[in-house]
Image (cartoon, rainbow, N blue to C red; front, side):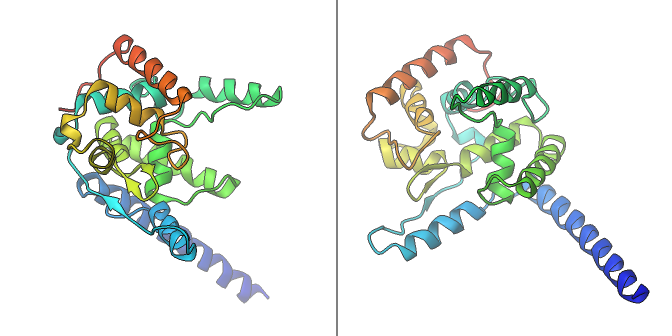
Length: 232
């Protein structure tokens, strides 16, 4: 029995060390190399293959930050995480507010930061269990420390789901406006950002009144917020 327990202990230690080495290596690697695929992309592809009525399209084209309009950075900053430049990966005040509203039975959007969303998209799978949330927190801290804000935003804009089979700002810009992301206008960038809470339901091609209202709100916020110190 003692030998079995020792073997289990050594196995768990090796497993833990292996995870630490693999996760650190992956984060350092993606600091410099474009992210080719994410778990969500693979999951969506498999789902589409299993659905006979769906079209398993896949549109993704990585572009560096200098080929992305400043308006795109500003739009997601204004709509998704206005404390992005100031927090260290977690917006504790937003999380507290969301928790209090949920306790009152009110449905509110989650308080995930752009850093958390990037960590989840690049390294993890969709879900809300404690194991995944714990891993999300771990990767959030890693990319804040190793990547920095500029790289986090660049990766976010290149991997985020922006429609069925559409990933990243370049693919979205080409699909919805027939132009590269470098030439997006303020209103176009705001319209894409307005759909991000549910890009499989809402589309810049056919915006609802609600999406138009969100677009207008985002554009006002873009004018009020401090400009991000990068982007074209």
